[in-house]
Image (cartoon, rainbow, N blue to C red; front, side):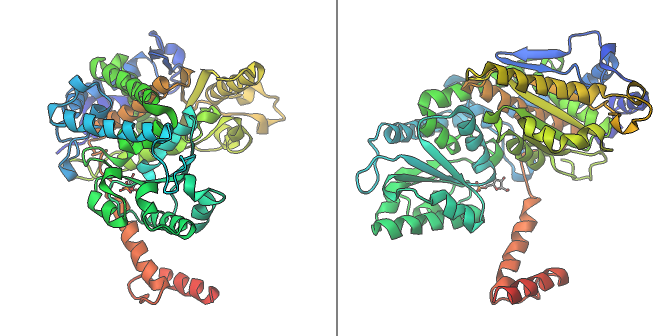
Length: 516
Ligand code: F6P
Protein backbone atom coordinates (compact mmCIF):
# COMPACT_ATOMS: atom_id res chain seq x y z
CA UNK A 1 0.00 0.00 0.00
CA UNK A 2 1.12 3.51 -0.66
CA UNK A 3 0.96 6.80 1.16
CA UNK A 4 0.73 10.34 -0.25
CA UNK A 5 4.52 10.54 -0.16
CA UNK A 6 4.62 7.99 -2.97
CA UNK A 7 2.77 10.28 -5.38
CA UNK A 8 4.71 12.11 -8.09
CA UNK A 9 3.09 15.40 -7.05
CA UNK A 10 4.21 14.93 -3.43
CA UNK A 11 7.79 14.37 -4.57
CA UNK A 12 7.53 17.44 -6.83
CA UNK A 13 6.31 19.54 -3.91
CA UNK A 14 9.20 18.31 -1.79
CA UNK A 15 11.60 19.49 -4.48
CA UNK A 16 9.84 22.84 -4.82
CA UNK A 17 9.93 23.44 -1.09
CA UNK A 18 13.69 22.98 -1.10
CA UNK A 19 14.07 25.98 -3.43
CA UNK A 20 14.82 29.29 -1.83
CA UNK A 21 12.87 32.48 -1.91
CA UNK A 22 9.33 31.62 -2.93
CA UNK A 23 7.37 34.83 -2.71
CA UNK A 24 3.72 35.55 -3.42
CA UNK A 25 4.37 38.06 -6.20
CA UNK A 26 5.59 35.22 -8.38
CA UNK A 27 1.95 34.19 -8.68
CA UNK A 28 0.17 35.32 -11.84
CA UNK A 29 -3.43 34.45 -10.95
CA UNK A 30 -5.63 36.21 -8.40
CA UNK A 31 -4.77 35.20 -4.88
CA UNK A 32 -8.27 35.23 -3.53
CA UNK A 33 -11.46 33.26 -3.77
CA UNK A 34 -14.88 34.25 -2.57
CA UNK A 35 -18.43 33.03 -2.36
CA UNK A 36 -21.45 34.80 -0.91
CA UNK A 37 -20.35 37.16 1.85
CA UNK A 38 -17.04 35.39 2.44
CA UNK A 39 -13.69 36.27 0.94
CA UNK A 40 -10.54 34.17 1.37
CA UNK A 41 -7.32 35.98 0.52
CA UNK A 42 -4.16 33.93 0.26
CA UNK A 43 -1.85 36.56 -1.14
CA UNK A 44 0.26 36.13 2.01
CA UNK A 45 0.99 32.48 1.35
CA UNK A 46 4.46 31.41 0.27
CA UNK A 47 3.32 29.97 -3.03
CA UNK A 48 3.66 30.66 -6.72
CA UNK A 49 1.91 29.27 -9.79
CA UNK A 50 4.04 26.17 -9.87
CA UNK A 51 3.36 25.33 -6.23
CA UNK A 52 -0.37 25.88 -6.68
CA UNK A 53 -0.49 23.77 -9.84
CA UNK A 54 1.40 20.97 -8.13
CA UNK A 55 -0.89 21.12 -5.08
CA UNK A 56 -3.85 20.81 -7.44
CA UNK A 57 -2.22 17.79 -9.05
CA UNK A 58 -1.84 16.33 -5.56
CA UNK A 59 -5.59 16.79 -5.01
CA UNK A 60 -6.23 15.06 -8.30
CA UNK A 61 -3.84 12.17 -7.68
CA UNK A 62 -5.42 11.73 -4.25
CA UNK A 63 -8.87 11.20 -5.75
CA UNK A 64 -10.35 14.25 -4.03
CA UNK A 65 -13.29 14.73 -6.38
CA UNK A 66 -14.58 11.19 -6.01
CA UNK A 67 -14.06 11.31 -2.24
CA UNK A 68 -16.24 14.45 -2.14
CA UNK A 69 -18.97 12.56 -3.99
CA UNK A 70 -18.67 9.66 -1.54
CA UNK A 71 -19.19 12.11 1.33
CA UNK A 72 -22.25 13.81 -0.15
CA UNK A 73 -23.78 10.60 -1.49
CA UNK A 74 -23.78 9.14 2.02
CA UNK A 75 -21.29 6.34 1.34
CA UNK A 76 -19.25 4.85 4.21
CA UNK A 77 -16.48 7.38 4.77
CA UNK A 78 -15.93 6.45 8.42
CA UNK A 79 -14.57 2.97 7.85
CA UNK A 80 -13.49 2.14 11.41
CA UNK A 81 -17.08 2.60 12.57
CA UNK A 82 -18.74 1.54 9.30
CA UNK A 83 -20.71 4.79 8.94
CA UNK A 84 -21.37 7.59 6.50
CA UNK A 85 -20.91 11.18 7.67
CA UNK A 86 -24.11 13.03 6.89
CA UNK A 87 -23.73 16.41 8.56
CA UNK A 88 -24.16 18.12 5.17
CA UNK A 89 -27.45 16.27 4.64
CA UNK A 90 -28.95 17.85 7.77
CA UNK A 91 -28.50 21.37 6.43
CA UNK A 92 -29.57 20.54 2.86
CA UNK A 93 -33.07 21.34 1.61
CA UNK A 94 -35.37 18.35 2.02
CA UNK A 95 -35.29 17.26 -1.63
CA UNK A 96 -31.49 17.28 -1.77
CA UNK A 97 -30.99 14.90 1.15
CA UNK A 98 -30.10 11.24 0.63
CA UNK A 99 -33.47 9.43 0.60
CA UNK A 100 -32.56 7.11 3.48
CA UNK A 101 -32.34 9.98 5.97
CA UNK A 102 -34.54 12.70 4.45
CA UNK A 103 -37.66 11.96 6.50
CA UNK A 104 -35.99 11.34 9.82
CA UNK A 105 -34.06 14.63 9.57
CA UNK A 106 -37.20 16.57 8.70
CA UNK A 107 -39.21 15.06 11.56
CA UNK A 108 -36.54 15.68 14.19
CA UNK A 109 -35.93 19.25 13.03
CA UNK A 110 -39.63 19.92 13.30
CA UNK A 111 -39.63 18.58 16.89
CA UNK A 112 -36.65 20.80 17.72
CA UNK A 113 -38.24 23.91 16.24
CA UNK A 114 -41.52 23.15 18.00
CA UNK A 115 -39.78 22.85 21.37
CA UNK A 116 -37.83 26.05 20.74
CA UNK A 117 -41.00 27.91 19.70
CA UNK A 118 -42.84 26.84 22.83
CA UNK A 119 -39.97 27.86 25.11
CA UNK A 120 -39.57 31.20 23.35
CA UNK A 121 -43.21 32.16 23.38
CA UNK A 122 -43.70 30.97 26.95
CA UNK A 123 -46.09 28.10 26.21
CA UNK A 124 -43.62 25.60 27.63
CA UNK A 125 -43.15 26.46 31.28
CA UNK A 126 -41.45 25.15 34.38
CA UNK A 127 -43.08 23.12 37.15
CA UNK A 128 -44.41 26.21 38.94
CA UNK A 129 -45.89 27.70 35.77
CA UNK A 130 -43.18 30.30 35.17
CA UNK A 131 -41.76 30.76 31.65
CA UNK A 132 -38.08 29.92 31.19
CA UNK A 133 -35.67 32.86 31.28
CA UNK A 134 -32.36 30.94 31.27
CA UNK A 135 -31.12 27.83 29.56
CA UNK A 136 -28.16 25.83 30.87
CA UNK A 137 -26.71 23.72 28.08
CA UNK A 138 -24.70 20.79 29.44
CA UNK A 139 -22.45 19.00 26.95
CA UNK A 140 -18.77 18.70 26.07
CA UNK A 141 -16.61 18.70 22.92
CA UNK A 142 -18.83 18.72 19.88
CA UNK A 143 -21.89 18.68 22.09
CA UNK A 144 -20.94 22.14 23.32
CA UNK A 145 -18.49 24.02 21.11
CA UNK A 146 -20.59 24.44 17.96
CA UNK A 147 -23.74 25.66 19.73
CA UNK A 148 -21.72 27.92 22.00
CA UNK A 149 -19.79 29.41 19.08
CA UNK A 150 -23.02 30.17 17.21
CA UNK A 151 -24.84 31.61 20.22
CA UNK A 152 -21.88 33.80 21.22
CA UNK A 153 -21.48 34.97 17.62
CA UNK A 154 -25.10 35.65 16.81
CA UNK A 155 -26.57 36.61 20.18
CA UNK A 156 -30.28 36.05 20.69
CA UNK A 157 -32.99 36.68 23.19
CA UNK A 158 -32.64 33.99 25.88
CA UNK A 159 -29.77 33.83 28.33
CA UNK A 160 -27.86 30.64 27.57
CA UNK A 161 -25.06 29.32 29.78
CA UNK A 162 -22.78 26.49 28.75
CA UNK A 163 -21.38 23.93 31.17
CA UNK A 164 -18.92 21.31 30.03
CA UNK A 165 -16.07 20.57 32.43
CA UNK A 166 -16.22 18.08 35.27
CA UNK A 167 -14.78 20.79 37.55
CA UNK A 168 -17.28 21.32 40.39
CA UNK A 169 -16.49 25.03 40.48
CA UNK A 170 -17.75 25.33 36.92
CA UNK A 171 -21.00 23.59 37.85
CA UNK A 172 -21.56 25.72 40.94
CA UNK A 173 -20.80 28.98 39.16
CA UNK A 174 -22.99 28.14 36.20
CA UNK A 175 -26.05 27.64 38.37
CA UNK A 176 -25.22 30.41 40.86
CA UNK A 177 -28.03 32.97 41.28
CA UNK A 178 -30.31 31.20 38.81
CA UNK A 179 -33.98 30.84 39.64
CA UNK A 180 -34.73 27.11 39.39
CA UNK A 181 -38.35 27.85 38.49
CA UNK A 182 -37.20 29.66 35.35
CA UNK A 183 -34.26 27.45 34.38
CA UNK A 184 -34.35 24.96 31.52
CA UNK A 185 -31.53 22.39 31.36
CA UNK A 186 -30.49 20.85 28.04
CA UNK A 187 -28.30 17.75 28.33
CA UNK A 188 -26.61 17.14 24.98
CA UNK A 189 -24.68 13.91 24.73
CA UNK A 190 -24.69 11.53 21.82
CA UNK A 191 -23.73 8.65 24.10
CA UNK A 192 -25.44 9.92 27.26
CA UNK A 193 -22.49 8.33 29.04
CA UNK A 194 -19.80 11.00 28.90
CA UNK A 195 -18.35 11.42 32.38
CA UNK A 196 -18.33 15.23 32.45
CA UNK A 197 -21.80 15.64 31.00
CA UNK A 198 -23.40 13.03 33.25
CA UNK A 199 -21.73 14.42 36.40
CA UNK A 200 -22.98 17.90 35.53
CA UNK A 201 -26.44 16.61 34.63
CA UNK A 202 -26.68 14.86 38.02
CA UNK A 203 -25.56 18.06 39.75
CA UNK A 204 -28.22 20.03 37.82
CA UNK A 205 -30.87 17.48 38.76
CA UNK A 206 -30.09 17.66 42.49
CA UNK A 207 -29.80 21.48 42.30
CA UNK A 208 -33.32 21.58 40.86
CA UNK A 209 -34.83 18.98 43.19
CA UNK A 210 -33.34 20.50 46.34
CA UNK A 211 -34.76 23.90 45.47
CA UNK A 212 -38.16 22.93 44.12
CA UNK A 213 -38.78 19.89 46.33
CA UNK A 214 -40.73 18.52 43.38
CA UNK A 215 -39.66 15.13 42.05
CA UNK A 216 -41.63 15.66 38.83
CA UNK A 217 -39.80 18.89 38.01
CA UNK A 218 -37.03 17.02 36.13
CA UNK A 219 -39.48 16.05 33.40
CA UNK A 220 -40.50 19.65 32.90
CA UNK A 221 -37.11 21.33 33.28
CA UNK A 222 -34.84 18.93 31.36
CA UNK A 223 -34.45 18.25 27.67
CA UNK A 224 -32.08 15.58 26.33
CA UNK A 225 -30.39 15.55 22.94
CA UNK A 226 -28.99 12.07 22.48
CA UNK A 227 -28.66 8.91 20.44
CA UNK A 228 -29.24 6.95 23.67
CA UNK A 229 -32.86 7.74 24.55
CA UNK A 230 -33.10 4.78 26.96
CA UNK A 231 -30.37 6.25 29.17
CA UNK A 232 -32.01 9.68 29.05
CA UNK A 233 -35.32 8.16 30.12
CA UNK A 234 -33.66 6.29 32.96
CA UNK A 235 -32.20 9.64 34.05
CA UNK A 236 -35.74 10.97 34.34
CA UNK A 237 -36.25 12.83 31.07
CA UNK A 238 -39.51 11.87 29.40
CA UNK A 239 -39.41 10.71 25.79
CA UNK A 240 -41.29 13.78 24.54
CA UNK A 241 -38.37 15.86 25.85
CA UNK A 242 -35.74 13.72 24.10
CA UNK A 243 -34.44 14.90 20.73
CA UNK A 244 -32.51 12.46 18.57
CA UNK A 245 -28.88 12.45 17.49
CA UNK A 246 -27.75 9.92 14.96
CA UNK A 247 -24.65 7.80 14.70
CA UNK A 248 -24.09 9.11 11.15
CA UNK A 249 -23.33 12.60 12.48
CA UNK A 250 -20.02 12.95 14.33
CA UNK A 251 -19.94 14.94 17.58
CA UNK A 252 -17.79 17.75 16.19
CA UNK A 253 -20.08 18.02 13.15
CA UNK A 254 -23.29 17.96 15.19
CA UNK A 255 -24.32 21.58 15.69
CA UNK A 256 -26.53 21.23 12.63
CA UNK A 257 -28.55 18.50 14.36
CA UNK A 258 -30.66 18.88 17.51
CA UNK A 259 -27.39 19.55 19.36
CA UNK A 260 -27.97 23.02 17.94
CA UNK A 261 -31.11 23.39 20.08
CA UNK A 262 -29.59 26.36 21.98
CA UNK A 263 -29.24 28.12 18.62
CA UNK A 264 -32.91 27.56 17.90
CA UNK A 265 -33.76 28.65 21.46
CA UNK A 266 -31.72 31.83 21.16
CA UNK A 267 -32.53 32.78 17.57
CA UNK A 268 -35.68 30.91 16.66
CA UNK A 269 -36.31 28.69 13.67
CA UNK A 270 -35.47 31.45 11.19
CA UNK A 271 -32.10 32.10 12.84
CA UNK A 272 -31.22 28.40 12.86
CA UNK A 273 -32.26 28.00 9.22
CA UNK A 274 -30.15 30.98 8.17
CA UNK A 275 -27.07 29.35 9.69
CA UNK A 276 -27.89 26.02 8.01
CA UNK A 277 -28.53 27.76 4.67
CA UNK A 278 -25.12 29.40 4.83
CA UNK A 279 -23.48 26.03 5.47
CA UNK A 280 -25.46 24.52 2.63
CA UNK A 281 -24.28 27.29 0.31
CA UNK A 282 -20.70 26.26 1.14
CA UNK A 283 -21.61 22.56 0.66
CA UNK A 284 -22.82 23.30 -2.84
CA UNK A 285 -19.82 25.44 -3.64
CA UNK A 286 -17.54 22.65 -2.39
CA UNK A 287 -19.31 19.90 -4.30
CA UNK A 288 -19.54 21.72 -7.61
CA UNK A 289 -16.32 23.76 -7.83
CA UNK A 290 -13.08 22.41 -9.26
CA UNK A 291 -10.37 22.39 -6.55
CA UNK A 292 -8.70 25.49 -8.04
CA UNK A 293 -11.88 27.48 -7.38
CA UNK A 294 -12.99 25.72 -4.20
CA UNK A 295 -12.38 27.62 -0.98
CA UNK A 296 -12.24 24.49 1.22
CA UNK A 297 -9.94 22.65 -1.18
CA UNK A 298 -7.56 25.60 -1.52
CA UNK A 299 -7.51 26.19 2.24
CA UNK A 300 -6.70 22.51 2.71
CA UNK A 301 -3.96 22.45 0.07
CA UNK A 302 -2.30 25.57 1.44
CA UNK A 303 -2.40 23.97 4.90
CA UNK A 304 -0.69 20.86 3.52
CA UNK A 305 1.94 22.98 1.77
CA UNK A 306 2.66 24.85 4.99
CA UNK A 307 2.71 21.91 7.35
CA UNK A 308 4.10 19.08 5.22
CA UNK A 309 6.51 21.05 3.06
CA UNK A 310 7.40 24.33 4.76
CA UNK A 311 7.65 22.77 8.22
CA UNK A 312 4.84 24.63 10.05
CA UNK A 313 3.99 22.33 12.92
CA UNK A 314 1.49 24.72 14.45
CA UNK A 315 -1.31 26.75 12.96
CA UNK A 316 -2.76 29.79 14.72
CA UNK A 317 -6.40 30.79 14.36
CA UNK A 318 -6.45 34.54 14.96
CA UNK A 319 -10.02 35.78 15.21
CA UNK A 320 -10.29 39.58 15.06
CA UNK A 321 -13.85 39.81 16.33
CA UNK A 322 -15.07 39.35 19.89
CA UNK A 323 -18.13 37.55 18.63
CA UNK A 324 -15.89 34.78 17.28
CA UNK A 325 -14.19 34.15 20.60
CA UNK A 326 -15.07 30.43 20.57
CA UNK A 327 -13.78 29.89 17.02
CA UNK A 328 -10.20 28.90 17.94
CA UNK A 329 -11.48 26.29 20.39
CA UNK A 330 -14.06 25.00 17.94
CA UNK A 331 -11.47 24.61 15.19
CA UNK A 332 -9.07 23.01 17.63
CA UNK A 333 -11.51 20.17 18.18
CA UNK A 334 -12.62 20.04 14.56
CA UNK A 335 -9.11 19.79 13.13
CA UNK A 336 -7.22 17.99 15.86
CA UNK A 337 -9.83 15.40 16.77
CA UNK A 338 -10.56 14.77 13.10
CA UNK A 339 -7.07 14.66 11.63
CA UNK A 340 -4.85 14.03 14.65
CA UNK A 341 -4.20 10.49 13.40
CA UNK A 342 -1.12 8.45 12.62
CA UNK A 343 -2.58 5.32 11.06
CA UNK A 344 -3.81 5.46 7.49
CA UNK A 345 -7.06 3.98 6.18
CA UNK A 346 -5.11 0.97 4.93
CA UNK A 347 -3.89 0.25 8.47
CA UNK A 348 -0.31 1.37 7.81
CA UNK A 349 1.48 4.04 9.83
CA UNK A 350 1.41 7.38 8.10
CA UNK A 351 4.73 8.29 6.55
CA UNK A 352 3.91 12.01 6.64
CA UNK A 353 2.81 14.45 9.32
CA UNK A 354 -0.94 14.87 9.67
CA UNK A 355 -2.84 17.70 11.43
CA UNK A 356 -0.66 20.44 12.90
CA UNK A 357 -1.32 21.74 16.40
CA UNK A 358 -4.20 24.20 16.10
CA UNK A 359 -4.34 26.97 18.64
CA UNK A 360 -5.17 30.64 18.68
CA UNK A 361 -6.71 33.60 20.32
CA UNK A 362 -8.86 36.58 19.67
CA UNK A 363 -8.28 40.14 18.67
CA UNK A 364 -5.41 42.36 19.72
CA UNK A 365 -5.09 40.66 23.12
CA UNK A 366 -2.85 38.13 21.42
CA UNK A 367 -0.59 40.89 20.08
CA UNK A 368 0.20 41.88 23.65
CA UNK A 369 0.85 38.31 24.68
CA UNK A 370 1.99 35.58 22.29
CA UNK A 371 2.63 37.50 19.03
CA UNK A 372 6.15 38.33 20.23
CA UNK A 373 7.06 34.69 19.70
CA UNK A 374 5.34 34.70 16.33
CA UNK A 375 7.36 37.68 15.15
CA UNK A 376 10.75 36.93 16.64
CA UNK A 377 10.69 33.38 17.96
CA UNK A 378 12.36 30.42 16.32
CA UNK A 379 9.25 28.40 15.45
CA UNK A 380 7.73 27.85 12.05
CA UNK A 381 3.98 28.34 11.93
CA UNK A 382 1.13 29.40 9.70
CA UNK A 383 -2.02 31.29 10.58
CA UNK A 384 -5.53 32.27 9.56
CA UNK A 385 -6.76 35.78 10.28
CA UNK A 386 -10.53 36.06 10.45
CA UNK A 387 -12.19 39.48 10.47
CA UNK A 388 -15.62 40.98 9.83
CA UNK A 389 -16.16 44.06 7.65
CA UNK A 390 -19.37 45.29 9.31
CA UNK A 391 -18.81 45.33 13.09
CA UNK A 392 -22.50 45.43 13.94
CA UNK A 393 -21.94 48.55 16.10
CA UNK A 394 -21.25 52.21 15.40
CA UNK A 395 -17.82 52.60 17.03
CA UNK A 396 -16.35 53.06 13.57
CA UNK A 397 -12.95 54.30 14.65
CA UNK A 398 -12.37 51.40 17.03
CA UNK A 399 -13.34 48.99 14.30
CA UNK A 400 -10.94 50.65 11.89
CA UNK A 401 -8.16 50.17 14.45
CA UNK A 402 -9.13 46.55 14.94
CA UNK A 403 -8.96 45.82 11.22
CA UNK A 404 -5.76 47.86 10.86
CA UNK A 405 -4.17 45.65 13.49
CA UNK A 406 -5.47 42.49 11.89
CA UNK A 407 -4.17 43.35 8.42
CA UNK A 408 -0.97 44.86 9.80
CA UNK A 409 -0.11 41.73 11.75
CA UNK A 410 -0.41 39.59 8.63
CA UNK A 411 1.90 41.99 6.83
CA UNK A 412 4.44 41.91 9.65
CA UNK A 413 4.37 38.12 9.73
CA UNK A 414 5.12 37.82 6.05
CA UNK A 415 7.38 40.78 5.34
CA UNK A 416 9.05 41.11 8.74
CA UNK A 417 11.74 43.71 9.28
CA UNK A 418 14.97 42.19 7.98
CA UNK A 419 18.24 42.98 9.68
CA UNK A 420 19.38 45.18 6.81
CA UNK A 421 16.33 47.41 7.36
CA UNK A 422 17.02 48.00 11.03
CA UNK A 423 20.00 49.87 12.29
CA UNK A 424 23.08 47.64 12.50
CA UNK A 425 23.53 48.30 16.19
CA UNK A 426 20.01 47.01 16.96
CA UNK A 427 19.87 43.40 15.72
CA UNK A 428 17.29 42.67 18.42
CA UNK A 429 14.82 44.69 16.34
CA UNK A 430 14.97 42.35 13.35
CA UNK A 431 11.78 40.45 12.56
CA UNK A 432 12.31 37.39 10.40
CA UNK A 433 8.95 37.35 8.59
CA UNK A 434 8.24 34.71 5.95
CA UNK A 435 5.35 33.30 8.00
CA UNK A 436 2.42 32.52 5.69
CA UNK A 437 -1.17 33.41 6.48
CA UNK A 438 -4.63 33.41 4.95
CA UNK A 439 -7.06 36.23 5.63
CA UNK A 440 -10.76 35.45 5.71
CA UNK A 441 -13.15 38.39 5.58
CA UNK A 442 -16.85 38.09 6.32
CA UNK A 443 -19.01 40.96 5.03
CA UNK A 444 -21.00 40.78 8.25
CA UNK A 445 -21.40 38.29 11.04
CA UNK A 446 -24.85 36.94 10.35
CA UNK A 447 -26.07 33.35 10.44
CA UNK A 448 -25.51 32.82 6.76
CA UNK A 449 -21.89 33.92 6.75
CA UNK A 450 -21.13 32.07 9.96
CA UNK A 451 -22.65 28.89 8.51
CA UNK A 452 -20.44 29.30 5.45
CA UNK A 453 -17.34 29.82 7.58
CA UNK A 454 -17.94 26.69 9.67
CA UNK A 455 -18.69 24.52 6.64
CA UNK A 456 -15.56 25.92 4.95
CA UNK A 457 -13.44 24.54 7.77
CA UNK A 458 -15.35 21.25 7.99
CA UNK A 459 -14.62 20.61 4.32
CA UNK A 460 -11.04 21.80 4.61
CA UNK A 461 -10.54 19.08 7.23
CA UNK A 462 -12.17 16.51 4.95
CA UNK A 463 -9.92 17.42 2.00
CA UNK A 464 -6.81 17.10 4.13
CA UNK A 465 -7.94 13.72 5.45
CA UNK A 466 -8.34 12.51 1.86
CA UNK A 467 -4.80 13.61 0.99
CA UNK A 468 -3.32 12.16 4.18
CA UNK A 469 -5.47 9.00 3.67
CA UNK A 470 -6.80 9.00 7.20
CA UNK A 471 -10.30 8.75 8.70
CA UNK A 472 -11.42 12.17 10.00
CA UNK A 473 -14.64 10.87 11.50
CA UNK A 474 -13.48 8.64 14.35
CA UNK A 475 -11.55 9.48 17.55
CA UNK A 476 -10.24 6.27 19.10
CA UNK A 477 -7.33 8.09 20.68
CA UNK A 478 -9.47 9.63 23.41
CA UNK A 479 -10.49 6.23 24.79
CA UNK A 480 -7.24 5.37 26.59
CA UNK A 481 -7.37 8.53 28.69
CA UNK A 482 -10.95 7.75 29.72
CA UNK A 483 -10.01 4.20 30.81
CA UNK A 484 -7.02 5.41 32.80
CA UNK A 485 -9.09 8.11 34.52
CA UNK A 486 -11.50 5.37 35.70
CA UNK A 487 -8.63 3.49 37.37
CA UNK A 488 -7.16 6.62 38.93
CA UNK A 489 -10.62 7.56 40.19
CA UNK A 490 -10.84 4.22 42.02
CA UNK A 491 -7.33 4.62 43.41
CA UNK A 492 -8.20 8.09 44.71
CA UNK A 493 -11.00 6.45 46.69
CA UNK A 494 -10.63 3.15 48.49
CA UNK A 495 -9.46 1.22 45.42
CA UNK A 496 -6.04 -0.24 44.85
CA UNK A 497 -3.24 1.81 43.32
CA UNK A 498 -1.79 -1.39 41.78
CA UNK A 499 -3.67 -0.79 38.54
CA UNK A 500 -1.85 2.46 37.84
CA UNK A 501 1.83 3.04 37.09
CA UNK A 502 4.40 3.98 39.75
CA UNK A 503 4.44 7.71 39.12
CA UNK A 504 0.64 7.93 39.05
CA UNK A 505 0.48 5.87 42.26
CA UNK A 506 2.88 8.23 43.99
CA UNK A 507 0.84 11.25 42.86
CA UNK A 508 -2.31 9.54 44.14
CA UNK A 509 -0.61 9.00 47.53
CA UNK A 510 0.54 12.64 47.61
CA UNK A 511 -2.98 13.84 46.84
CA UNK A 512 -4.54 11.56 49.47
CA UNK A 513 -2.08 12.47 52.20
CA UNK A 514 -2.80 16.17 51.65
CA UNK A 515 -6.56 15.87 51.39
CA UNK A 516 -6.86 14.59 54.96
O1 F6P B 1 -13.82 13.75 23.13
C1 F6P B 1 -14.46 12.62 22.67
C2 F6P B 1 -15.90 12.89 22.33
O2 F6P B 1 -16.47 11.68 21.96
C3 F6P B 1 -16.10 13.94 21.22
O3 F6P B 1 -15.90 13.42 19.96
C4 F6P B 1 -17.49 14.37 21.48
O4 F6P B 1 -17.78 15.58 20.83
C5 F6P B 1 -17.50 14.46 22.99
O5 F6P B 1 -16.64 13.41 23.42
C6 F6P B 1 -18.84 14.36 23.63
O6 F6P B 1 -19.45 13.10 23.44
P1 F6P B 1 -20.98 12.89 23.79
O7 F6P B 1 -21.79 13.75 22.89
O8 F6P B 1 -21.25 11.42 23.56
O9 F6P B 1 -21.21 13.26 25.22
